[in-house]
Image (cartoon, rainbow, N blue to C red; front, side, top):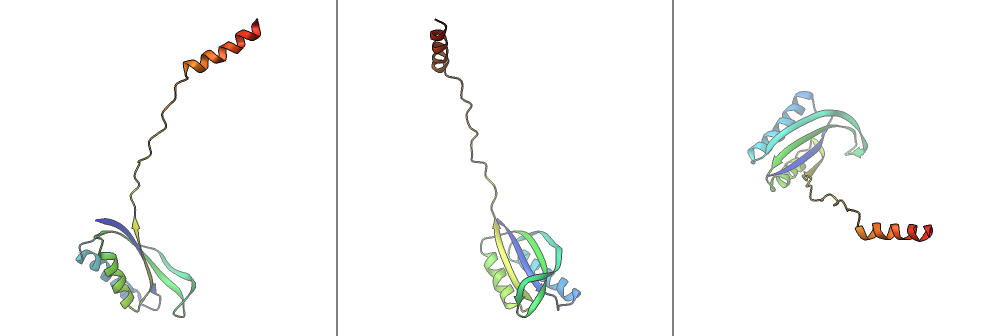
Length: 126
């Protein structure tokens, strides 16, 4: 299963109880299709949009972090596209950071270079 971030904007004309039900509906959609909701973050809350969407200038932002099979994001986008209370949605696949970069090897001072460095000093002394 892959990890995803789902961000969606709900119409602010929707009342609080209906908004909570909508958030719960999409969380249950994720779990019903074999996904696992890790976190639902509503701290962004009501914000002014950068541009008007369907003549609306404000939206309620919700961020969901989840683990889901690869087919689930398409199903979520389809359901959100049908729902008229969702202004926009975005699903991003989270990549796990892999540490494949090896540290540089520490180079030991070459004995040849040390011998060459001493040779000019000996010539100057003569």
